[in-house]
Length: 462
Image: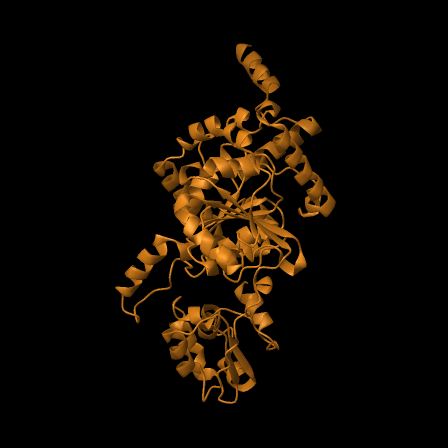
């Protein structure tokens, strides 16, 4: 919000104020929020995600407003885990606290992974995962919207670049981006502007370990806010709407990670499905998960079944195309696409924040599913010819389409006038084009059309 809008909103003061510690500290230092408003009016202070506040570098901001919190104020700390940071925050905020420890969900596994979520797995080698996910998505064997999990940022961008070659538009929920940018990506996905979102679960990757080693080498006092959201990647606490299918492109390393990922679908008793691509090296993780959910082959019970809609012939029909395209998605291409994604976020910088607040429709121009590769995808890769599909695949494809139509999944997109927005449009060129159109419509002249040039040549000859 703009400073004037903040000042007006806080003039009350309001009954409930929701903010980050940084914003409160800035409002106090800038005089937008009066310290007296806190010391005289604050009755309840709630610090959510307490186990992350200090690790993200908010200690200085919290210390900026805690001296103004009256002793009569009721303070609540909410934390999913107990850590040294939580203990430090308790000493900073609380006085003679009462600790309420809530138990886990319980031993009822049906409450952890509800029955309305169907779980499937596909056995494939690590090198064939691009082939299998292309077959699942391109043949239309899963319902949209689709949330795809990877374990590294590089793999997220490699998958995005690969899918682009086949005309499948997607966006990457990149933990390197600022929070506002990630929220905007989520808003676009929830609004149905694109159907495929690739999320990086850094809690399962080596990148998290490398980040932890670097942070341990720096003293706690001088530690800056972490650049990457590590615990459960960038999806912790995020509300994904209308996600029907979750795909584990790379398996998580723990049962807890699997449960957290699958929990992104089947919300509010809606139907959902999960598909896990499992390589031989990941079979141990799958067995742990199956043991946790109570699968027993001897008793014939299986909560995680093999994916029944994908045939071997359908997969092999796409192998030649997949292997040819996969070779073009090099490490250099991935590195350049990561850099390009960050450059695109310049539009979300502080300089343009005020403009977007007064012109919210301009945010529609920031398409997070835009193509990152330099070359447009070849037309022949956009569609799968019928002669490549066997009869079972055609029947499965039609069955999924009928189910989607019956559930009304095609109505999730944002409603409004059907206008085509020009991609990567230059506002100056658009203005010049509009002016030229106006001149032609009124019969005037802008001195640049062919008739004017002919008259000038004729007069010059005279």
